Structures are given as C-alpha cells and as structure tokens.
Amino acid sequence: MNRIHFLNRLAETDAPFNLGAGVPPLDLYPALDINRLVRKFEAEHPQTSLLNYHATEGLIRSLAVEAFATNEGHRSSVDHVMITNGVQEAISLAALHFQGQPIACRDPYYPGLVDAVHMTGNRIEWLNGKHWLDQVALLPERSLLYLSADFANPTGEQINLEERHRLIELAEKRDLYIFDDATYREFHLDERLPALFTLQPERVIHAMSFSKILAPGLRTAMVHLPLSIAADFGKLKANMSLNNSGLTQAVVGGWLHEQKFLLGSHLGLLKDRLRENSAVLRSSGGVFSGGFFAQLDLGQPVADFDWCARLLEEKGVAVCPMSLFSEDPDVRNQVRLAVAKISSADLQRALDIILRFVQ
Image 1 (spheres, one colour):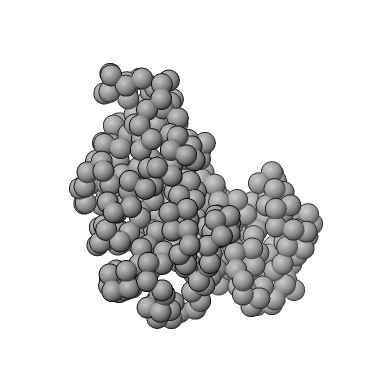
Image 2: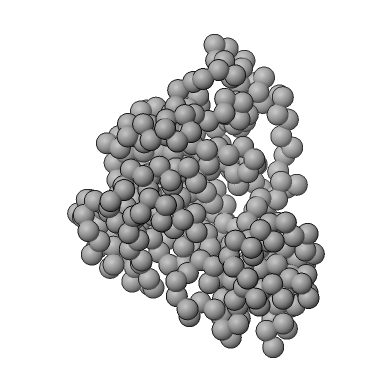
C-alpha cells in the first residue's frame, strides 16, 4: 500500500480509536458564530470590502501585528507580516524564494515540507539524531532550515532554550534563515519558551496557523518575515494565489478582536485532555510534552503501512507509521499517535490493543 492510499484511508476512517489524524477537537472549543464574527470585523473595519480584491499581503496584517505583540511580546510593523492560505502556502513560498539553495530539515520530518522542496527542485540537507545542531553548523551559507521549535509534527518534540539561542547564533554566523512552523506552539503544557523570531526577527520566518487553534477549514496563517525577504514573498504569493479570501480573514479578524488578540485563552479544556493523555502515554512508554503528537516505540520493527492497515482493519485503531515521516529504516519500531481528539480512557484502551497486536 503506497503512502497516498494509506493517508486517504486514514482521513476518511471512522475508526473507534483514531490516533492517526492530526485534527483539532472542535467539540472542546467554543462554537464559532461565523455571522457574528464577520459582523464584528466589519464594525471594526467599516471601509473594508470583503468581496473585492485586496492587498496580496492580507486584510488582517495589522491584527496579526497586535497578535504577535500580545502573545510573543514582540511588536513590529505590517511590513514584516503576511497572511497566507495556511502554513503550507508559506512553506511553498519559502521553497520558491530559496530555490537553488539547500533546504535543511530534521528527520523525522513533516511531509508537506519535503513535498514542497521536491516540487521546486531544491536539495534537502538531512539533520539526524541528537547532534543535529552540530550539523547545522556545517550547512552551506544562505541555506534555509525548516523546523518546528514547539511540538513538531510528527515527533512532538520541543527544542529547549539553550538550543534556541545556539540556533540563532549559528544562523547569524553562517548567514542562514530559519522557517519555524509554529502550528502547535499554543499547545504548551508547561513553561512557554520564547519564539525564535523574537530572538532574531531578521533570521526567522515564523508561521502561525489558525487551523489547529480555531478551525482547519479557514486555511489561514499569519507569517512574520525578515524584512529583507518580505517583498519577494509578496511577489511570489501574488503569482501563486493573489490573496486570501476576504471572508475567511474577516472570520479570523473578528475572532481576534473578540479574543483581545489572545491566541490560546480558549484552549483550557483541550489542555486538560492533553495533560490526562500525557499521563496515560508515560505509563505505556510513550513520549509526549505538548502539541498534538506522541511517539510510541513498539519494541519491534513491525510498523510499516501494511501493519498499520491491518491494525485498522482488524482492531479499529488508526495510527501512522513513523516511516511515513523518515528516511531512516530504523524507525520501523515506532508509530506516531495523534492524541488531541481522543479521551484518556479511549487512549488507554487503544494503547492496550496496539501493544497486544505487536505480540
């Protein structure tokens, strides 16, 4: 079974225990009143026509500036900010901007990054293992490094404060740029670490998605860009998608006004669930510190597509093999678990089924 076939089945499954799909549990979020949010935006911005063409960089750039200032303590200007069709468009824009330059990423990786790099013909520089920062120090100048500093997909890992400072030092020394995919940043359970772009805004592309904190269907992200590359990103986006939907930006903009620009104040119920699931995972050998994803080591190299397909068909448990996200054959003893949509009781039952299925 190939990767695309497996992912299509995973997205469509109504399995009793779906640990495969990284989607937000919208039932734990306050209901979105789309009409009210649009009216709120129109009241705050009465001169804006939502059904007309508008600036490629986005209708709600000024609101993104406020959101970055409120949540990250960093105030910049609209010249640094762009609204994109999700983080995936921002990744594609980065791959185009850095076309001809190496693009580095850690293994295991987010497939959307690798697919975008392959489409533009860039060379991927793989960073492997615990000493990945030593490998960053050897990257060619003007390379782009993609990572998620907070709770990466698929590993769920977070880089610590010391690693953040060293990474910025290397970027300045080696003339590197960093793309920080901050999709899962708001789902921290402990201390909130500084965002990379606040340490050095001229070296870091910070992409924050509303897909996980609000609703995936909005396809909206706000991106903070180094000023030196912002204009070129605008030209590339104009040719790629012209602009984002005014209506969806109005929904996000109205929501930002209502939330007083706080991105995570409504996530209490979900964080309670994640803490409960963290305890369940630790008792079964899983690794989880925040975000949506955890790794589970099965102890045997069995976790390929066929094994996961059988687990789904025979036991009703959906998981992703870590081999979907890695070039390393040694990851066949690991699976990725999406733990945001499942209760702690169902997670425990699913883990028991998985571990028995291995035997």
